[in-house]
Length: 391
Image (cartoon, rainbow, N blue to C red):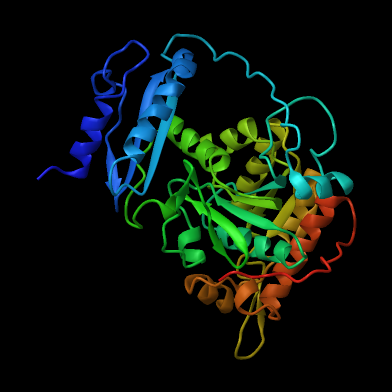
């Protein structure tokens, strides 16, 4: 019996390269990954030939998508420069497409959000999306993804239209944090994000099984990120929150170079070892000319639920002092609470599960501080119309 992988390879043999060779005979294909009738592969070519190969990528994707039973296809085109070929050519500046940003973009420009004013040409924005915020950390284990999803919900509760992009290709968290098990649909060759709590969400974790490792090289990660940014029907958003992977590597550079980030929020815990890495994160965004909106101190303190005694398990106030030292804003502190962890594990973040709780109020304060930085105003008025939440 012919497997799906065999059908895919047979189909790709009918797709011609720029030189007229069958795609399967060019030596450019990665392994074909098939998961639950979803197909993933990459085409790796020399960096100088990417433009000529882009139509091949499109034809390959269309051909596989037309196979019976295939529900989605991700084809990454990666351009790699051969060793000794010299530095990559300088990136050509791009301008934001006319009309990009929609109503959300107009709102950001009205309030003077960073990056919204006219200025030197740079990376393009995403049509229909106003502000794009990267939530980052210099290291893992500081609760960055938990902060990102609750920050998004806090911004939503300010009356804003918010979306979430999970940019952590190797360790996506949104499927677990938001209890998303369904797969996104493809409409007209573009993916429809999953909607949770009234917010569109996209993650590579929606397309692969939970235990499937993403053994991808840097160029394929960059291509996948670009596709999740540009080939998803995000609609009109005031703010997109991007949950970045930890560290200062390919994903961060890709986001800074290929999309007009409005700013970055750095998450840290109070202890010195975490602040060292947070400092690196701040400096990295500064070097790629992305404004740092400020620092959030997560797991800031612990109060015993039985006796109310407060313990500064990881120290306290370190992120605030570091923000002052670095000349950036301190956006707030979030306590170390059992309810935050249990709500996250249950797939209903604390801001949605218990909006009046101490933890939710802490995240709401961070969201208000972030929007104040974006809008240039100290207060944001909630939309007067009703907000429809789709569960």
